[in-house]
Length: 281
Picture 1 (cartoon, rainbow, N blue to C red):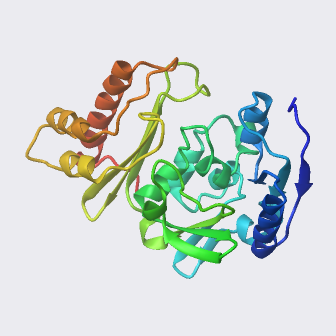
Picture 2: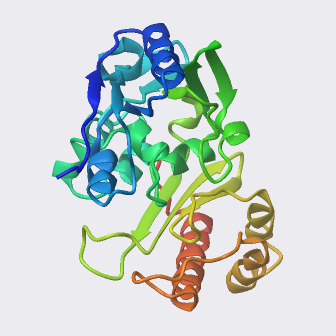
């Protein structure tokens, strides 16, 4: 049970939500945007999250969009992850999202909740980093569209009062060859050890990672090394580790040494898989 009370609001437009946030904040309140609520409930029970005003964005039509418009795929922030796997417009996203928690939880966990959450895995952002999607965010200054790699630095760097509305992806990326693997030390639906996602575009492999550090990331420097075919698979991987962010996670799911061991073997498998032609089409 959450140990504090809060007021609940459900605006029906981006403008209404942003204005409501600003009004509540100006009154000294501590509003939070809400789409699925799993993290607020989980962390609220542990007194790690506090709010006295919930702003539910599920009533905003733009936040529930899922489908193509012209040559772009629009994914609303309030979509549950289960929808992304049931209506697989984006195969890499389907694969990655389908491995977050279990199906019952994915009915509640939303795309925006996962991408903007405090729990450090946030695997749903990996495909969007790989395809260099744009994010649509709303706030007191209105609506703006920004490349996700410009805004995502360990987390989505939203301004005060802003919220994620949509993530937009060019259709040209949707069917690129890909691979996504989640490694767990324990049971099938336990917390992951690491997740690695990769996509091949213009004969160049892109990689994004979760569970290696306390935030998801994509590294241009690592990719340059991993694509250097003059070296052996293992030499490429070991050299790429020079560009890993630090520190590497060391927790109950696995030590730093074990994570790096699993990551090395996973990346070698990825390189063999792609360069032998065994990729998803």
